Length: 111
Image 1 (tube, rainbow, N blue to C red):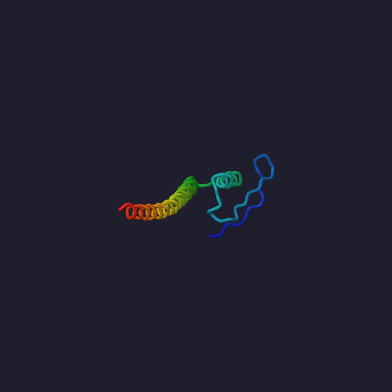
Image 2: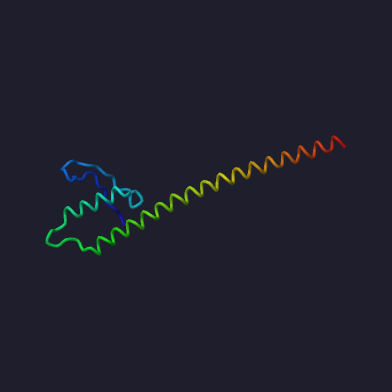
């Protein structure tokens, strides 16, 4: 599903505010959702307001999306830490090999 770019919206006080939502769902944050929600509420038909179940469904979807984004960030951090640990492990292996070589060399010279 594609999201059209929003280049300007009119705020509550009539001031122009800009937002770039055209990046897809991954680019939307809580601030963008609140803007969309308030715009939807401002422009609804007073004789036929938005159904509460629809509003709750939208909130639940956004909450789920937000949790998934947080999880993706956490998994990215864990993956980066895993890479760092692998680099440290490789350096320790090199150090252990060097120390073992020096120890073996000094044992043969003293014998």
